[in-house]
Every structure is written in C-alpha cells, then in structure tokens.
Image (tube, rainbow, N blue to C red; front, top):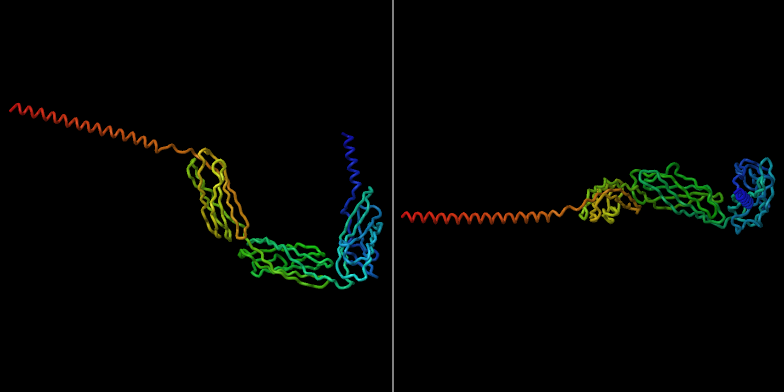
Length: 421
C-alpha cells in the first residue's frame, strides 16, 4: 500500500512539473513609474511612437516568479496592417520587486488610426523551477496614422424586458461593434418610454464599457414599472451615444417591449364529496382571476389513479377580476371502493402566451354501490298484492256465504209460515 501511495505521489509530481501554471499573481503595477514613462498607468500612461516605432513600458509585479522573466506581445489578429514584423521577446530581471518591461513594436509607415487588440505574454518560473505563464490583454492605439477606412455602425439586438406591473424590473440589450480596427468608447445608453409607464431606475444615462473591434457588450438597465401601467406592448426609444477615435457619435433605434403582470389565478378550494362506485359524481372548483389581465385557455384536470382516468374541463377565458366555477364530472370505477389520493391541475396562459400551472392534492372516498332497492320493493309489492287478492277473495267468499245462509234462512222461515196457514 505504501509503495502504491509513493508511486501515485511521484506520478502527480511529474504531471505537475510537466505542465505550466497559469498564475493569477502577475499584474501591471498601475502606480509605478519606470524609466521612459512620464506618468503611471493609473495617471493615463500611453505608449510613445517615434520613427515608426512604438515603445511600450509595462511595470509588472509577478509574485510567484523567481529571477528573470521573458515578455512578448502579439496582435490578436495577425492579419491587420500594423506591424512590419513580430516584436521581439525581451528578458527582464526584477528591480525593487517590479519587472520594468520595455517592449519595442515596429510599425508600418502607412499605418491607419485604430484600436488593435493584442496580448502580452509573461513567462517565468517559481522557486521550484516550475514554469509560469501569464497573459495580459492590451489594446495598441494608433492616433498618428492615416484616417481609418472603417465606419462604425453599432448593432443593437437581443433587447429583453422583465417588466411586471408595479414592480422593479430590468431591460437588457446587446451592443455589437462590427468593425475590425475601431473601438467604441465612452458609451452611454438612454431609454425612453413615450407612455411614461416604464421609468429608468436611477440615472437615465447608463454607462457602457469599451467595446473592442468585433466584440459585444450586454447592457442591463434597471427599470420601474408603474402600478397603473398598461399591460401591452410599449414602444421604447433607445439612444446610444459613444466615441470613436475621440469623435462623438450617436445611434438611435426603436423597439417594442411587453409589460406583463404575474398571473394571479386563485382557487377557492376543491369541493369533492364522497362518491359511489359506478355512479356519476361532480367536483366543483371556484376560480378567481386576481390579476389585471385576461387569462386564456383556463383548464382544470382531475386525476385519481385507480379510480378515474384524467377528466378535464375547459373554463376558457377569464377576464380580470372574474370568478368562475369549474365543474368536472366523473364516474368512479366499480372496483375502486376505498379512499384514494389524486390531484387537480389548473393551467392557463396570459395574453403573451406565458404559461401558468397550479397543482392541488385531493382525497376521494368511494363507497360501495347501494343495494338494489327497486327489486326488493317490487318483491314486497308483489307480496302485498298477493295478500290483498287473498283477502279480497276471502271477503267475497264470506259475503257469498252470508248471502247463501240468508237465503236458506229466509226459505225456512217462509216454509214455517206456510205450514201455519
């Protein structure tokens, strides 16, 4: 076991030494001023250009690096017309815990003004001799060349609003820079809703970060929607002001954004009485639209496994503030006697197709079918009918007997009277 552990530790050490570390402990010292700099990076240092050569001073702090480091710079897009050749890599030793890096960039004589993204690469080693690599993004800005051959036309897209009546929301949009050599700087976005229902929270002018050539920036603007705002599409005027090569410009577009309201469909409690197997029963569910907008395709579905298949009823459209009764009819299976659990699902959507669903748990008791009372009653009635007939016959026989006895008696009395005469 110890041998296996040692072997694994050795393998991990070999792997760790085989791959360089991309350290985060290397950065430009914004406040350090080295030879060749008239001001610090924090104060707005800019590289100098003389005789078609750019001198870039980069004071670096690399805490994990020990000894000499090697620094180079390369354009992110090597096809742009800017450099006559690839700048040479320089080796720099630390001075006062700072590496005073000075890069020389040979520029094209007929270069054009623009902003050219580049990457500064730092290579060094730590105390254990392990290689460290760090990259720093940089933009080479040319302002002494010929006029740019490009014109900036920003693209505003993917505008999305999360705007509910009476709540804080936001509007987000994407601004893209389609150029290859010009950066968009000092950007500000202004939004105006002509109806006044949507208000920008805080400043009406929202700052936008620099947008480098070929890049995009997502801007999120906090907004407030009035409590009495119209639930409809709102026309939003977007103004994007910016600068290119120090020259101010402006771009305007108009978009439509919906103002919605959270669906507030309340239910008044499920009324599910005890049911009898194989007999029709009804469930009633009161529904109330507590929101300010209409609800469409309101549907109520009852599901009780082992008792009934899904039974649904379409309530339809419910206007704001309207109350309706959803009545679902069902017939429990004959063999479903007992207590069962199920659910009632209420679904709908608003005018913009946003769905809503609510589920309620229900219990249902199914009783056995009642005895066949009709047959027993019929038999009882038959018994009663037979007794009545017998009684009537007896009464008739008794009456006949009495009549016969009366006749016989009358005949005897009549004969006695004749004998007396």
